[in-house]
Amino acid sequence: MAYSEQVLHRARARLEQAKAEREQENAAHRADAYARYPRLAEIDNELRRTMAELMAAALQRGEDPSQAVAAVREKNLALQRERSWILEAGDFDDGYLDDTPVCAKCGGRGYVGAQMCSCLRELCRQEQKKELTLLTGAARETFEGFRLSYYSDQVDPNLGVSPRAVMTGTLQTCRRYAQSFTLKSGNLLLNGNPGLGKTFLSACIARTVADGGYSVVYETAVHLFSCLEEAKFTDSQEAKRQAEKYTACDLLIVDDLGTEMTTQFVSSALYTVLNDRLLAGSPTVVSTNLQSDEIARRYSPQIASRLLGSYRLVAFVGEDIRLQKARET
Image (cartoon, rainbow, N blue to C red; front, top):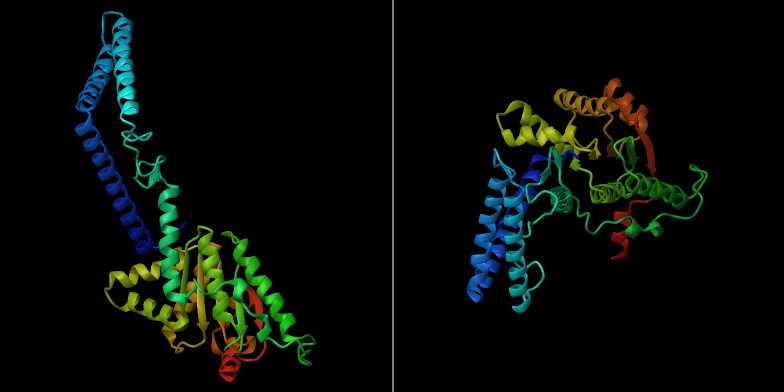
């Protein structure tokens, strides 16, 4: 999973902190046990010496080391039996002096070989969730909280069905996409008038996919293009790292496409982001208030072709929910 450098940095810092705290805890356990039973300190020192003796005996040359190895092993076992007896007599908890690492798989390094360990991956997932919550309020927005009652159940002559029927399908599509997300899930284009729940369901997708352990970047179109412009025209390393996230993440969500100022740079940047992710096969979700014909008029044929030809169109219909809520108050 391609987590951003910021998320990875925070996760590594938390792992290092947890590792340091565990080492301090282990040291405190040793100090406590040695103070109560000084013989334990002597035994642990002797055990370390017997290990060195065992290795030396095993490496003896010119004679059979088996007897020496056996003698060292017997001494080692005797010390371990005495140690166990003292720990039991002292009513210590199991594993009290085991120097247990913060992670049994990686020892707190965060990686097993070249692969990220599950402990660091979980911390990345948590840090990403915090980031998404700050950006989207995704902790409050869930698929279960999406209220279909805001959409009329009366048949709309222009649709041939009720807005509620359309939005029931829209909710199912977004939920299914998020819950079964893989790196080959394809792209969604959420479009419809303002106030119909596009941002709400985009946030639900972000949270659910992130909970599945995938890296998710959620940006408004205005902020995305601002970051890309800063990365291109300034020396800001932070902006350049931010821009790299847009192509490296497992899922990119661009909210409110069409609210940005259309400039030559914006058109070029949008084409690059969309095209790079399509070529890499990386899933993207875009939400917009623009209808298909408006997309075709606003953007270049290359951009419109990609949005309308390579994305699954998910329609949002009905009456502005914000206006409905305003009438309720």
